[in-house]
Image 1 (cartoon, rainbow over the protein chains, first blue to last red):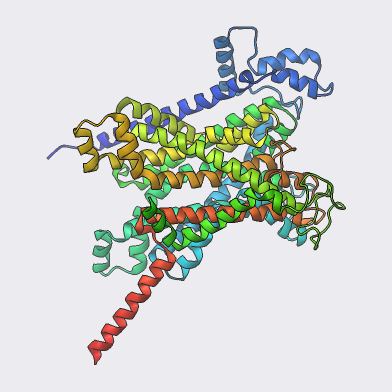
Image 2 (cartoon, helix red, strand yellow):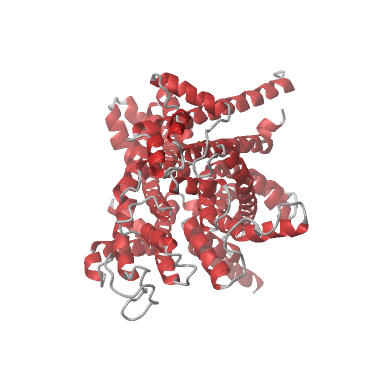
Length: 338
Length: 302
């Protein structure tokens, strides 16, 4: 018998996590490089475009500072690149044009909590409901739950966020004034930890969160349903049933427990849709998150804001992916025993 | 090949999906004949509600929404198909190459795929489009095509890896078939269902993404497409003034083609993995099974 110390497993676990972290580091570097390359590959330079568009708002003396923001310093390309990377790691994205003279980092930090609230709640709601319905649809294949839920999920999967958001806005906020059309809370209130403010936040957040959940739920349902069906014929389920365990116990503690693992992996792939969907939802409902900020930045040709925004979104994507890696460790019994 | 087509059409979902898609294709081809008005001409008063003359009403510019929808079908379908072809070609090439050659080739290609998968795609597309300025539908197709291949590459690679271990592939390799023949003649035909799945999925994705980019104002305002219709409706605050037809018409068009295409894809999936079969088939089997059991019990009782 091989001697197998618990610490060996611990080493495996750490190696797995470090490998993932290294991968995300490289991915971030790729995104940063891409961000660095875009203004250089395209005609004209952003500083001059912005100066021309600012209508005198930016003093011509600020041009050098602007150029420096993009790393357009008077130096060879590789030095520009390293200067640019240095500015990222010191969290210095330059000054915003639209919100001049606020630093981009501050503008983004104000918007970030709203996006996290929106994406977090939508993810929680859609993943739990979608997964639960997926389990039931697979377990009662061909019965009512499956017949209603699966085709609906399939249809929802091909409905873009912009359509859901516009329809929600029209039917529930304009036609019937059930919900507000914009903002994250009643502008006449001061942010505070009291019920009045919190209820206003929930009331304003309802439609955006529901919109985003509707966009995401179909994918989670279909994924979980397919994973569950893959488990159905397995011997260990027949064994569990033969032991006389209750139907619910076999379904959730046995079949769903094992089907959840690939579903969690699929979760990571859905983050693109999550952040993309949140962007659209924020724009349609005029919700003050980072997505709306990106939109305002693009409309106002605020290049430092756009670039800082892209890096923040990349960072958020990578962190979300790492969180899924961690969840995987806890769900996969082969790694958990560490 | 005709066998494949027959199996595909015998699947009810696939047949309904294909019908919807073919109707759209017909509309796109015969747009000049179907559309009653010039989509960019002022042909009525602003924001007229749907009527006998203007089936889907008019925009704030007094343009006919129905004619815009018809011409928009042409743009959106063409962009979807072109980008879908680019996505599928790149994804398939990378997926098969990685799986077939393995080793360091696989390491590099797989790493590249995974990096592209974890980058936030829509913001990236937005930034690219922002720096390019307002771009036409073809540029949008190209941008989406070149940036969206990662998912397809991943699933194709996974499928090709399992295919590689099959006996007939091993045998062909042993009798010394050249690499190009192994890939094009032995592997590719056996990956058709995953390639088709990838292509249809990419077309859906492109149509949605194009509409989104244009809605956000990054498309050329001169083009007539569902996305620019939504953009014009948004800038004219059509929703706020109650001109629902201007917003709901392109929304409905996008949703319906999305449903048609994904029904087709569900059909492809069911043919490739019979275990995933749903609804109709399963319900039918269960009903038959139940009836048989009842009969058997009755016979036993007698």
